[in-house]
Amino acid sequence: MTQQQTGFSFEVYDSITELNDADAQLLIKAKEALKHAYAPYSHFNVGATAILQNGVFVNGTNQENASYPVGICAERVLLSSASSQFPGVAIETIAISYYNENGISNKPASPCGICRQTLAEYEERQHQPIRLILGGLEGKVYIISKAAELLPLGFSSSDLK
Ligand SMILES: [Zn+2]
Image (tube, rainbow, N blue to C red):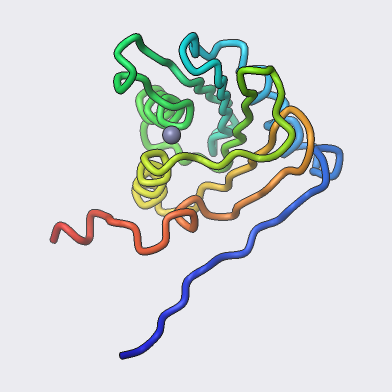
């Protein structure tokens, strides 16, 4: 028997004001996208904005449904949209913001498990990392250099072969 260990490091900023201009701009765009979320059931609005390798910004917001499992997260809306509108163009960075039913958010929220799985496959497809910038409307901001690090020992296409 051997013990294996996994883990990763990420950057923690006290607030958006510590980010470089490009990262701050992307997080602001994600916050602006929040108004397009459709979350009448959870009242948990999520907005995501990606910068693609061609310089284009793509938004995603969560889209809920009266049949709850039909709803889709902002991250997967964004990934599907980017892949459909700009096939073959790599995603460099995605900023993700949110607020809860009280209209507040003061700490970063991380993608859910399904989104982590999806992000990992998009990263594999494009053969380059997707950076994540996670921040609420205020408070600390996390920057993760590679999305797949959120999913240690993740299942991937190589497991099917
Ligand atoms: Zn999700």
